[in-house]
Image (cartoon, rainbow, N blue to C red; front, side, top):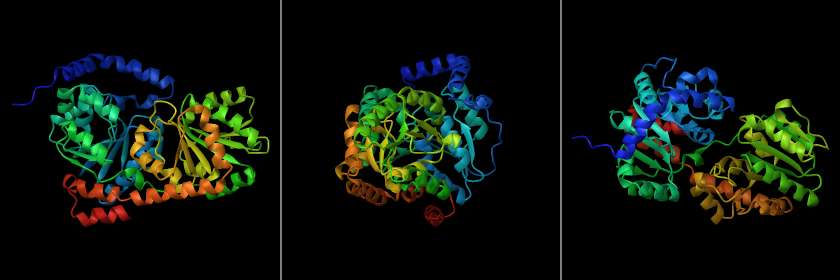
Length: 436
């Protein structure tokens, strides 16, 4: 006899089913704020225009840019051994990244709303042979639907913070039912693995963190040379992947830093480039001169803020600055993956809220490879200390890169653990793909 669904899950599914017509209104509201693409509305309701490709199809769901970046090497390895990959995301920025970075033959769709109708319609259309959700994407309707099907279901690069674990633990029947839907959890760390086991996951392995296997972000050489010539000998500070509220914190710190470094240039790169107009207005209200990357803006001696409002150029921005404040860490976003900055060689400063990559940051903090600033008013002092001591910034960045290099190997371990589910011909083919 099948296990009965807990009452809270039945209520959630019933509400999601009843409210599905209102998702049209939600979609319209999200379009107004640039969070959806109007022409791709059907995808959010589980309808795909493309046909399912012949052969094995693996569906990977990654919510946003960070998760997408972490699974791109895995998608490339699977593609090299002849597997079709369907990648779904939530955010528009992740979709734009997927469009430019997915290997030939792979497909991108927006993930359906988490309601019984859209989820079932999506799964019926694509009929994947393996489903993998990335990091912490736990959606009740999707998980329940997967439980009813025979398709292998994997949590990839899984993470579970202390607070999330405590929240799930308060609902043992619900968490036990939800996490038992998974056939395999590939956890980022031993701490994450222990939390998943406590919640009743059937099989948990710890192959490592895929984010450590990220490739060094590239930069156009001509653009890099041109910008460095424009900047000259000025001090440069990068505020990367900032969220609403963090631009104000950054600009306050910049004003303070100008007292010690009057020629300082701030390179400001928001997490969502669509906010460029809003940020430009904010900068100009502060009486600061600004130049926009998207306008091919020139950096002259009067430029105080260079706004990096483009996608796919983080490798360029990191290479311009010896010191980086990594955003999403002074609000509830949970921080961003520091690996790319570490690989390029920019010394890192963050706020205190980095739950999205806590396992990585913990190692960084212990080794002195990153600076954690607990209060926004202390950001200027932390950045100024590194700007004024380039040898310390260089030591910190070298330590960070060494930690990243030591943590590599998760991709190959993950491919090995997935082999029974992707039914490739031999383990050697997967290992070769991981090294190419």
